[in-house]
Image (cartoon, rainbow, N blue to C red; front, top):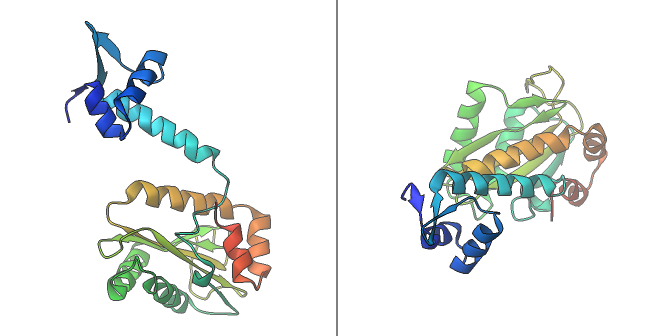
Length: 213
């Protein structure tokens, strides 16, 4: 992609019509300028403009974690007590049933390798084991709720973990992956939300607390 872009190139990059790009430029919404009678745009300016627009849209969305395509009620399990390895293996098995996960063993290996680097207990009773691997075709999530503290799951604040949200994404899904991890953390920082989830015996209710659509 050239450093200086034409209307046609910007339209192709943004996947919109050339007329839309022209209108945005005329209104001053899209940063650009005229060289003679033709519009030209700096690639970095266009990329920054897109990132800003997408960030504002993400911030304006409801405070749920993700979409119903990523998390289903069938991928929510409730347990009375368990150790960390059992929780992780059960969640891997749930994700392996998804059409987006094509290699259960690679997922299991990736999840445990990530835990060896550092525990994914992020604090306030929540664990978020996560991995990006080539055998996952789209981001997918499974959730385990444990009525008793999970044995062996260390956390940044040394508080016992009872909610575990496992995320698996395709290797190149960095932005979506990071947004979802951030949303999980933000949503579950709410003490009332955590309490309602831990006390519930209804996977559908827990699912509803964590989705945006």
